[in-house]
Amino acid sequence: MKAVTSVPAPSTNPAPLNGAGVQPPVETPKPAPGAKLMLVAKELNFANLCTLAAGIIDGLAKDFAKKNARVKEVRDDYKDAAKAAAKVYAVLEIRLNTGKEKNLIAANKSLGDFIKDITGEKPPTHALTLKNAFAGYVMSGLTTEGDFDSNSGNCLELGARILTEVKGDLTHDAVVKATAQLKERSDKEAKNLREILASVKPVEKLTAEDALEMFQRIVQEGQLGVCLAELPDYFSQGMPETDQRENYLAFGRCLERIDVALGEKVDLWTSAAQSEIVLLAAGKAVGQVPPTESTAPVMETEPTAELVAA
Image (cartoon, rainbow, N blue to C red; front, side, top):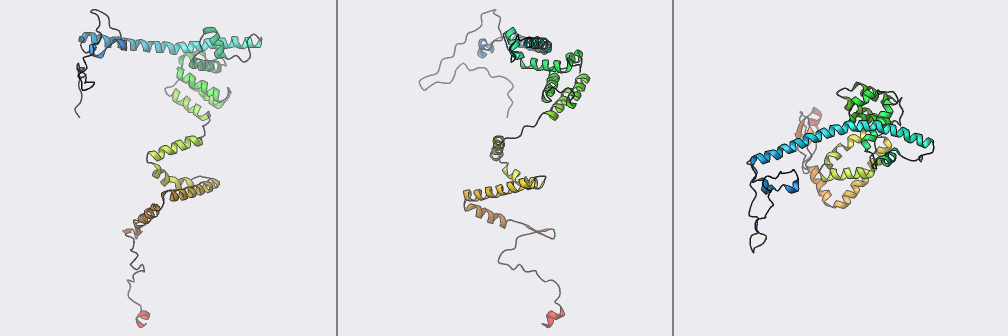
């Protein structure tokens, strides 16, 4: 296939709408002379762009590059601001708890709702999670505030999730390991924290609905035969005997239902498959002996005296 090296010029003669005639060229608004073009999709018509000078097109490309750089700056600012907000939220949580103790604030008031009352908006989940990390590791004395400031938001989130999984137990081995990672801040910190989280996060048991959905995909994508070929190994490798019995009987009932569903052609398939079986004898492939031939062994030794006499 020939590679496309340029964008084709837009057609000025669109295809006819019907046999009566040809649709007239679409008139597109053109920018006023000297007007500054803005990166607004609805205001930049492709046909007009194709007629503009190269310098104008290059300028638009540069404008977007500048915007992209500003987006990165804003993103970095937001990341740092989220950590700062976590400290603010920690202070607000202290105020909230004090108000509850003095019966000035409802006992069921959440921190999120308390912050919304102040700011008019619900706080981002990320910032609240960072607050949990700050309260759990810094305010408890496990790490310093400098450790918190120097860590990435991702690692702090992982640390907070570890605390949640162990229900805030600061003496838990997973928290001890996470504290060490937040202090050391190695290149593999995030990976190590994810592994620590995985060690305490309960594995969700596969539901029957999820299992059937996976099985349907296996069948639809033609992988059922591969799975069935492996099935005997799973029966013999660590499956409890009670499960072996239940699964074996279920497989037998399933096979009976398949026979009924497919009918007589199953017998033809079975017969054809048996006729194709290759028997191995003395390490050499030997075709199945036709039923009309004798299957008695051929005597290759000399007859004994007793047989000759007989």
